[in-house]
Length: 154
Image: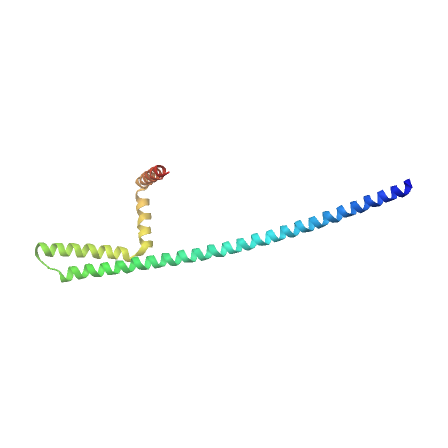
């Protein structure tokens, strides 16, 4: 009888051990599936994020081109208005001098705007290259002012 009990005990132990092994295998398989699924989801999210970033970049580029076109068009209109003021206004006397100065100033401003933002950027870059110390001091001053404005609001 003791032998039968030992055999039963051994058999129960083996069955329990076997069940534990199968449970571990099932858990490992499930964990691998969960990891694979999470990895796939993360990859799809990265792809979607990259696509969204590309679309945002395209939209920003389009908006930049439209803004540049608008500035150029405004400059052209301003230059034409300046020419018209100068040509149609009085030619002599005090009013003639004022008309000529206003018309000339509008023409110059219009020509400057017609160059668009890229031309303005080149001018700013040239100004910084010609005056690096002043540019750094202006940058420090602006940084100080911005820091004071943002710190007083919080």
